[in-house]
Image (cartoon, rainbow, N blue to C red):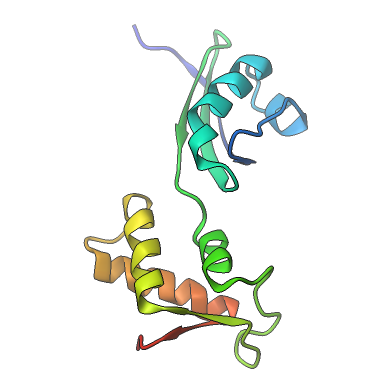
Length: 139
C-alpha cells in the first residue's frame, strides 16, 4: 500500500546548513530529522545553495530529492560578481569563458530540459545574458 502525500514543498538551503524554521514548519515534517539527513547529504557541497523537493506524507514521514545548485549562483561564482546587472541590456557586470560555460552546463544537465551539453550551454547562456554576464567566444 502506498503512502498518501500530504504536501510537496520546494525549498532552498545552504549546503550543510539547514535549520528548523518557518520554511520547514510549513512542510509539516519532523524538522530535526530532516535537517540532520539534509546536512549529511550535502556536506560535500559546502558553500553552495541546494534546492530540495520535500514530499511529506500523512503519517508525518517524508522523502526528499536534492537538485543541482541554481545556474545564477554558479554563473555569479564563475564571473566573480556578487549580483547580476540591474538592466542586462545596458549593463554588463562580468564575463566567463566558454570552458566555464561548458562546466556549468555539464553540471546542470541532469536538471535541465536539454538532450545534450550544447543545448544545456544555450540555456545557461540565456541565463547569463539575462544577468548581464557576457560569454567570451560564444554566439
